[in-house]
Length: 146
Image (cartoon, rainbow, N blue to C red; front, side):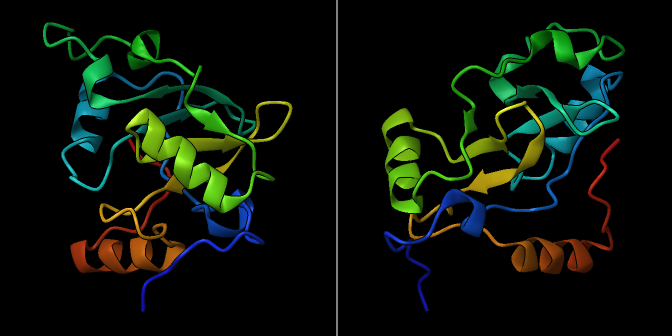
């Protein structure tokens, strides 16, 4: 069965609720390691209160960046977040127009609520159950990376 976002569904209905996150002090090597999983397209760096500090995509980190350097300096938030109340079909269009498959879901104060993950096919969104299943297959289960 193909998951299609109906007009009544919102981002908060289809987002991953427990995405992997990294602490502010994480290093370039830790982020590169996270990107070793081909399902990971965006790293989320959050503070101890759960506020999104920045996001990183693989192309954000320069090839010559030192592995011990703090990764957060290479990140950005602009154009990488989405409102949880936005209709899911609008979110799909936003992602496709930007050529993206991931957006951090944040509330009006910047608290990370989840991660919107468009499937490779563009026909629906990744689910918490699917992510948990892949983690179980790999023998990992933590949502806090690093």
